Image (cartoon, rainbow, N blue to C red):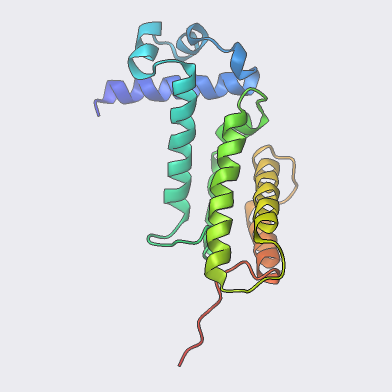
Length: 189
């Protein structure tokens, strides 16, 4: 990708994230994004069809980066190891400006919904892989875990918790182990 195009896109996204942190998504205009990014409206429209497309691409890009940077290649479980959970929390902490803005903005419910959907699928898969026969309703447990993890992520990125990413990872992993949510080690022969 041409360096000028990349720089324009980065400026647009950065401006957009700053605006989401300041005001409701519905109140943001393409003019404001262009002005803040120091590009023309035409440049914004060259890259994005509208602010909804920009939001969608921001969310998609951040989720892809999150998954790519936090899960070891070929892993199927959402959090296959405590280290992967720690990398996830550290990544979220490093990119807190975007995640905090997206989670806190009342006009961006799509972000919270997508995050919970990703977590729902991941915990569902993780439960299937754990090999534990549960007496609990799987759907209720998966929903509970996804909502709880979304809350923990929100606490971390909005700096509403006094705990570090490492402390959160350690405690969440302990909870997952206690509830047999982590892949069980295979016995060696």
